[in-house]
Image (cartoon, rainbow, N blue to C red; front, side, top):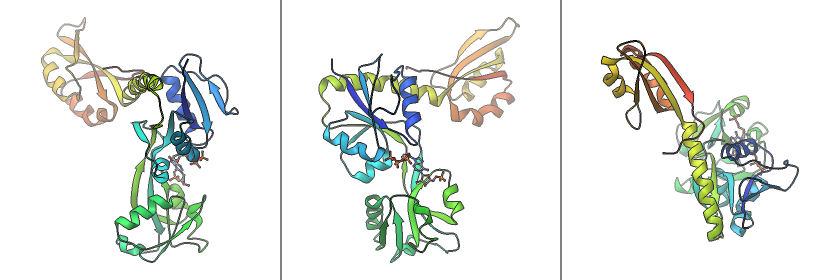
Length: 285
Ligand code: PRT
């Protein structure tokens, strides 16, 4: 039987969350990451543990059918690989940063400067689009120290919390791109494996939708149901169930998790009580 070969990062920032999303999709991986390959018992799939930076080539060659990979790496390798889903973890941005003491007012500051980076292709494209001529210093790690040791005037690197830049006396001045983990597909994938991918995608989307949503329950006086229903940012109208206490009902619905704090004060002011917000495991609409 055909098995979908999925590449995930062998070790590093993407590894644990990649296995977690597969687990949430009901796919449990058999053996540890010390192997190059791992089998899966409950889904027609095989795991290939690879370096993040090597994955685009394996996809292009058809050695892996799909992969969980940082979008920044796909963009940097400039390969025509289709992204079928953004996975919502390992979020970061590729940014330019300069020493804090420098007065940076516009991109023109970068003209003629030396910029250290591990992302030369993405940086070159940005500089070209902005008609800036700069000298690139390509280094594979610890880019942030380049200005302190006199190697560069600026850096172009991934940023998530910003603390690495801060600790090295640098200030983020331009964002070049946003990145997150994504599911990318090999151009060589065959029809049978494409069907397995569709099943995987169905599960992943149910998991992602659930991660972004919350189940909300609240009690409300009957005369306030309409007002409260209008405040709740829900897809459809809420379920209303009568409480034993006369004149009161329980409203149940699903909301976007980020919207809850925006409406909580309005819900309370409209008379909502006993508000519960609960995680959802899977969501199929
Ligand atoms: O070795 P391999 O090729 O497998 O992987 P890698 O060297 O690309 O590995 P890894 O594990 O460091 O990064 C894997 C992916 O995680 C990256 O390609 C990004 O898609 C994603 N990611 C998310 C990050 C970060 N956030 C991140 N903050 N990758 C690196 N960083 C580094 C950044 O380079 C800088 O040194 O963290 C530092 C900045 O972090 P903050 O929080 O201080 O801003």
